[in-house]
Length: 90
Image 1 (cartoon, rainbow, N blue to C red):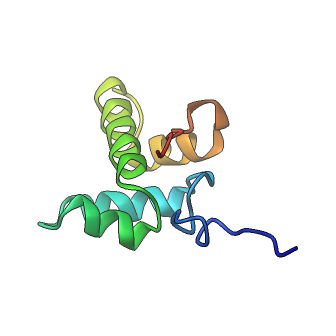
Image 2: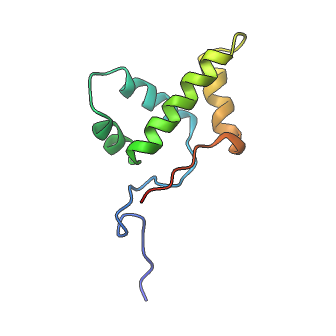
């Protein structure tokens, strides 16, 4: 029996995988461009809700942090699995 892949089940390739620091920087770069969430999600190989949730988490972390740089925040989120955003695609 052939193993089902995320793609064969209709999910993006990165669905359910941990966000890396590089991916979070790419998300921020895409977010500031005048493109749709659908385009962002396609380029990130994630769902729209995962991208929106991660962006919300990044904005919240930046708003709450007074003594850390953007790089420190992104790297901290990438290393801490307890704050990884999970999404329930239906």
